Every structure is written in structure tokens, then in C-alpha cells.
View 1: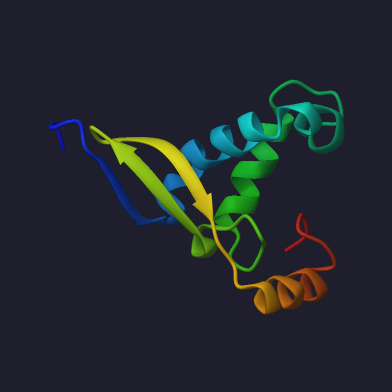
View 2 (view 1 turned 60 degrees about the vertical axis):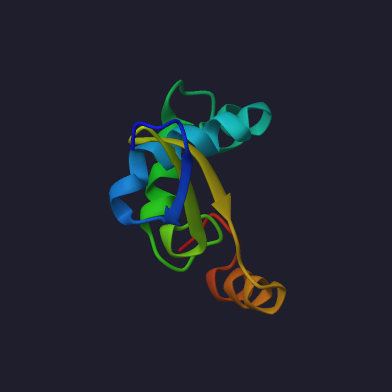
Length: 97
């Protein structure tokens, strides 16, 4: 779309690279030390894999993306509170799928 309007749509696995970048950027204070283990770029790859894996707190099936002129510019994660608890218990934590 080229009229400058932000469009919201359900995320898909195809959004994985943009989502990984956005999630790592949003969590930059913790991303590299915890998820990246000090290795540059590793956190973004970890978030990309989490996004692609259904059933985690950060997966595509719980996300909406915002697009502007065909580019993903934002990501909204959404899980009902009781489902969030179930997902966390089922996976042993938000980063394990």
C-alpha cells in the first residue's frame, strides 16, 4: 500500500526475519546478554526461531504485524492471560517450544 496508511494483519511464519529483528530490538537490554550469550546477532536469530515456532509466547500464531508501504514496522504479541499461563507451563518457559 502506498498511501502512507499503517495496515494491521495476522502475522505468518514468513514474517520471521522482521519479527526476529523487532523482538531483539525491543529487548536489546537483555537480548544479547541473555539470548545471545554475548555473541553478536545470536539474539536476533533466537527470536527469529521463537517467532517461527508455534506455541511460544512470541510465536507468529500470537502476533499481529503492522505494515507500512509493504514493510513490517511493528509487532504486537497477544495471548489471553489464561492461555499465557498454559503456554508457559506447557513449554517450561517462554523461550522453549
